[in-house]
Image (cartoon, rainbow, N blue to C red; front, side, top):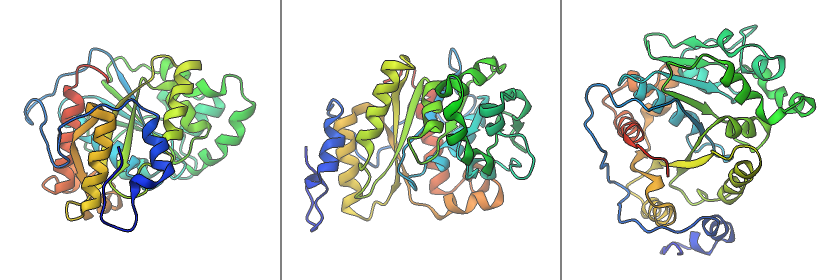
Length: 308
């Protein structure tokens, strides 16, 4: 199905778009991009999963909202009774910054867990003023892990082994914020996770590279992690004033069906401002459109009893 547009740039005519969309089974849905039909209510404690859900937030395209989504979904879940660990797997350490977790200097981080076999428990810190939220920080040292992991035994499963050894019995969610690449760090995340969450921006280039990401998920499922599933797609940076945003959202929904959350994340200045204060938008400005959207998205995720 091609996107119908009146602009000179026709997304449906792009071979990259057709390749990405043809790599998945098309499932029609009648949901509209602005719908926020979330199950359950927004108050109190949300249902806890039967076992810890390990979710990798991945997309090799930069600037699509991976870190913003990871941090704010995790914060929203923790505010409703869920115990959540965010694993920052991006050398930029943006998730650590947003969660006010020290990640400079000699602070023990994910790099030492992956390369030096440091126990995960030695690096996990509780997020200030968020009793149910924890962070495993990343420092710039993690940038060298791609090279150093190459020569290590079971290099693709280092994170999975570390999480398995970590006492996560009381955790409801482990959210892994992946770097914008398909290198060994992202592979480690996909091997360690049971679910993949893909943020997709509602813009022209949204589907570029998506086909390659989905092929990598299939390869990892076939050879390294048979339990891995694409469970969630989040539409981010939605601008209701543009026709293109709604067209991209409709196209994504038509091919991924109910894997796509009903809630869409709008463009919001508050989402960009919050990390500079060492906060998620959930605490920085809970009344903002971005905070309310991520709260609705987290509610949807919490109430999903089955994985697509």
